[in-house]
Every structure is written in C-alpha cells, then in structure tokens.
Image (cartoon, rainbow, N blue to C red; front, side, top):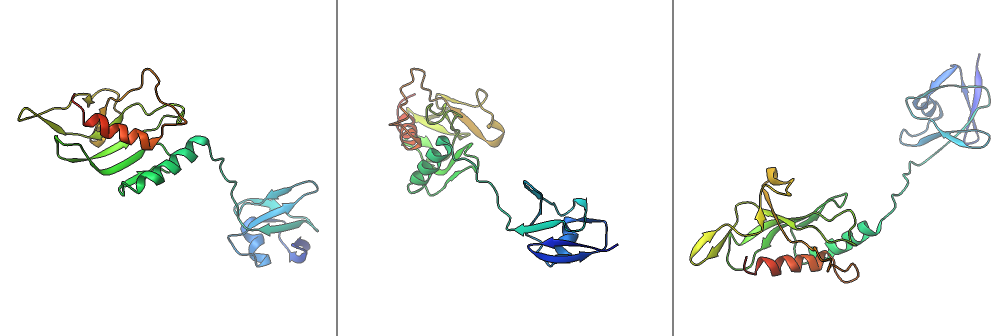
Length: 204
C-alpha cells in the first residue's frame, strides 16, 4: 500500500515498505553527497546510504551538507605548527607530519668538517612537547668528520641504540637534557635546531 513521507516539508509518495538512504535520496531528488536525516520526536538520526529502514506514512526527513566535528587543537599541535612554519622560511626542505609525529629537514647544512656537508635531519617531538625537549634527533647515516687529516666516525652518532629509524637510513644523535634546562616559555623547535647546529660544530 502506498504511503507518503515528508522530506524538508515536501510530500514524497513511496510504495516500498523498506528503503535505504540512497533510495530515499533518489526518490526525493536529493544530491548524493547530502546527509539524510530522519526527524524523530527529540532528535535527528542520520540515515546512511546503505542502511535500510522501515518507512511509515508521514515519516519525516530532512537533509543538509556533510560536516565534520573539528578536532581540538592542543597546545602541542599549535606550537609545533607555528614553529615549523617559522623554520620553513630558513629551511625550504622542511616538512611536518600530518599528526605532528616528526619534523623532517632535507638539505640541512652541516658545520665545517662533516662529510658530506649536507644531511637529512629528523626530529621527533615528545608527546609532552613543549614542556619536554626532543630526546636527541636523527641524522642521515654514513656521515663522517674530519679529524687530523682523516675521516672518522662521529661521536654521539649511533645506529643501533634508541633508533627506530635505522632501517630508513638514519642514526640517532644523542643530544639529551638530563638536567632539564629546557624551558617551554623560551625554547622551541627553533632553538632546538640552533642547538643542533651548535653541537654538531663542537668537538666530539
């Protein structure tokens, strides 16, 4: 037996006892990318395209644009995004992961004495950033330093310890903060990168 449902105030005749969201949209001439909603007494219920539901006479529906709830922006995310954008002005090869799990700098110029003179730098900000400093950083593998006319393996430059990125061609460079000199109100990715340049330029 035929029945009538109402969509956005317009009566739409239907014959079937069950319809899915896609079929209701098609009957009512609703664009496929709209969100179909069944209006109940005290709430709206989204009707997915593939969901079948029993339709009754005078059921009411509406539709609207598809939205998503914005994710909360944490202090960590805000700080890292701003700081990475600032650093990118000096390091055009900088990229930050979508989830801020790492900051990657390509073509990083190394201080005098390193061979080759450029490398890739990978920084992994901790979950507690900016309250805590990054625990060292990662450098392209197979770097060397000049020492007394010879090329030697750099100190504090470790492949097989504290290094989940060894298989990607990185060594961990130990640059720790055991006495907690890091200050969240003064330090940042920008000061950390400057610290990298400073300590790569000092004797091992």
